[in-house]
Amino acid sequence: MSSSTQSGARSGAQDQMSPSDITALEKAFQDMLSSTQVKTVSEGSTTTREPAHEDSEEFDFEDEYSWLDRMTPSESAAFERAALETLFTAEGLPVPAEFRYLLTSESDIAFPSGNDVYDHSLTARFSLDETELKNPAAPKDFFDIQNLNRAISPADAERSDVQKRFRNPSDAPDPNAACIMGFGADNGAHVGVVCDPRTRQFLRAHPLFRKPLCIEPHYSAIPVYIAPSGVHADAGQGLFAACRITVKERLFREPPLLISPARISGHIALQFDTFVVDRVVPPRVRAAYDALHNCWPASNNAEHRFGIVRTNSIALNFPTRTREDPLTGCFQLLSRANHSCMPNVVFEWDYKTFQGSLIAVRPIEAGEEIFLSYTDISARKAVRRETLQRMYRFKCTCLKCGPN
Image 1 (cartoon, helix red, strand yellow):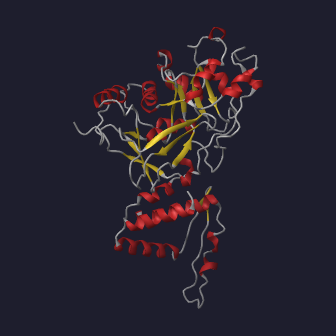
Image 2: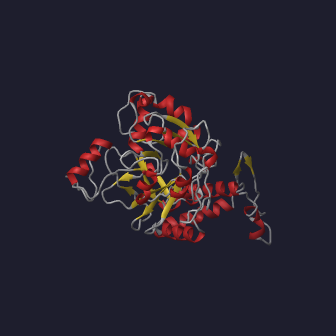
């Protein structure tokens, strides 16, 4: 988040605090600066700073605290988090929602993060690796390489045209066969994938197949936080705005933790923990996956992990699949968004950068919960409720549906 946005967020936090809270906050800040030791943590190191002597006739504030400017980015982030915790929690004050995103650390997210990592323009170049498509280890004569590279587009309007450019399905391997693979650089943060042979070949030819996958923007600027949701009895945790979000603002972009078909065969479901999650999902990504909510009953770890994918998956657009039989993705942040028939964000998937994102459809205030729609909001209430009860095991009581 830009410095101007952060400044606005902080002003909003002050507007929500009483005069006595602000006085206590200012006192805590002065006490912290005049303390005998200030510690900054960076990979286990500790820096100690002695205060100026009380009898000193001159006090050069800029020189006394010039060590702040010499901090590394990790030291600065650690100091800022420690300062916020001191200023609020140590004084018994609640941490305003506008500040909570600043308390996020890099270890809290499954993938590396950064600003402007990928080209998101409509003219961004995207082409499949023809060498990989010609690889004899892959199914032969499966892609029309020349036409496919020219036809790839995320637009639904071009989906049927892309499908026509594949060779006759009779030339392909068994479409019901399951391929299990990793997608992304082997850096401890890649996506686990369960797919069909056609999609496997497409992914192996993808320009990011062995490249690092990233969350954008930098984790410290992602304007959301995770907290318990009371939207319905079994909601688990939800996604909340850490500052005011404007209409059409893109909150963040993130790769999925796991991709799998909407319909998974029984033999894979029964071994979902060891055959899929433990086998192809790296530990850091696996921890984020295991932290997601499961609304389905489970008597063992395989059922629990399969319940997670059933509870949290979002349909993804791939040119190798039809809209009726899509692949789905579980996300660390996106999948935390609960349902409402009056959503304040919409989901967008870009297979070129392998990222999903949320886009605000109306202004969202700081502290407000972020809602997606899990079903067709144009359907009748009875139909919406039946779909949600069958697929996600809850009765929707959002503002559109009402309590009854």
